[in-house]
Amino acid sequence: MEMEIQSLLEKLLDINDSMSRCAATAAPTTSVTQKLARHRDILHEFTQEFRRIKANINSMKEHAELLISVRDDISEYKASGSMSPRMQLLRERAAIHGNISHIDDVISQAQATRAVLGTQRSMLGDVQGKVKQLSDKFPIIRGLLGSIKRRRSRDTLIISAVIAACTLFLIIYWLSKLQSSRK
Image (cartoon, rainbow, N blue to C red; front, side, top):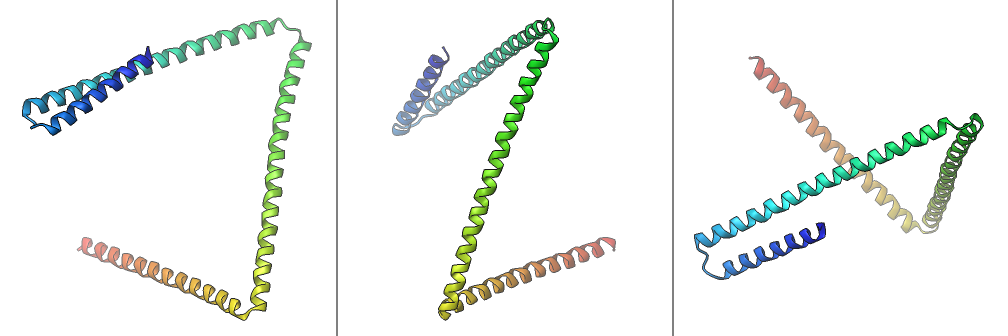
């Protein structure tokens, strides 16, 4: 029924769009534009009502599922109350074993991640070493790397100077406002 209503709303939207296109090609009069606006309002109201009812139904379903789940838990608790202490201990042991195996999985994932990061670090070290070897062999590359470093440090200095100047101007402006408000 939900899908049927959804398809009907989509059809109504298509019809409204078609009516709007037809009205746009013809000479639009106030009565036509008012009717189009009313049809759009009706579609909007239907869509909102559909969404509200759908949300209510989903909420009622979740509520019913929660009640069923609680009833199942209560029945299970009552059934486990009649269990022997040995059975309860075995059940607890199984739960602990499951948690330990989950922790082992997480630890193994962390170790795998550590190994991958170590591999990446060694690869980056190798690349850095090769670039250094190239720069030692070819003075042009060393000069190029040096100019890149100088340009990067120059850009950093320029940005730092601009930030410092803006901060200084902001402090001066704030102090002047503070003094003018005291007068």
